[in-house]
Length: 354
Image (cartoon, rainbow, N blue to C red):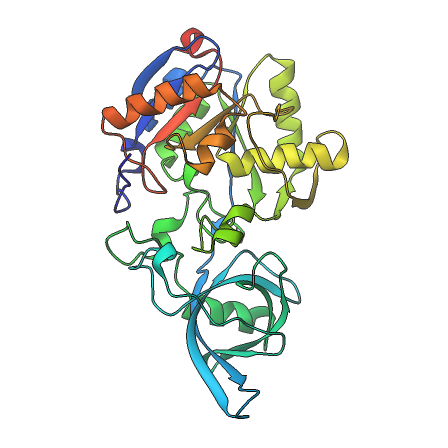
């Protein structure tokens, strides 16, 4: 399936593949048609994490242990989420988003104590290197609070991949309901939802709630690190959302997650606490064909073909044959993929709601 190469201005004009995993019912629509396909009493849950300017250029300064000279090398740092005393980051070699991540030159193998200089106003020290990959590190910045946030927003830019033709503005990678800046990359399943569609859903009797989940990186081009993705990610499930889920269950409605980050937040919360409850934490939950959701009935997702890692995540909601047939139909029909692409609604009961 071809990738979308630019953000569309009319968000809700994205195409929408409708798939009922139980009956095999399949249809084509637009995201703005969602009110026709969801029933009064259903609950739609979005991820309201805002997207960070998570890509920063830096120069690594380190001592050559043979010559004792100071050496320097350019790198790209990608924040994997919001940190506390230290921030977890992925390190890429010199270059930028125009080169596919898997073709980027490897970065220097960083060591604890190495210094990274982003500008005269921001520097950091390597505090730890992950056993997963030397490209995954913990950084300790030389400032904190408002000074750090100000520097990140001045110097950073959105994480971007080579299939997107032009440099992205930070606004282009935000959902309309974005709040706390937690996400390293946009929770992209929510991007096609505009306020007109959300209001139409409310008028149709569909309740809307939110969680905050720190959506992480999709790829860094390092096989060892990419195989470990998604890394553990922060979530926050508010009391209002727990209450909304209880109401939906009581009236026989379906709980539909907008994106697998919402699924990870809710199902990770339920696994962490034994049952869904309001609270924050971190989840390492990985979805797949053997995972049986306890909280979520269906999902709105981007387009992902067989062989992609995200396709395997969606098998928690539909069998391989139904997913394969649906996405092969979408590819033949000209749907486009990735964060600015088209969407799919995978939920039982579509025929009844149409």
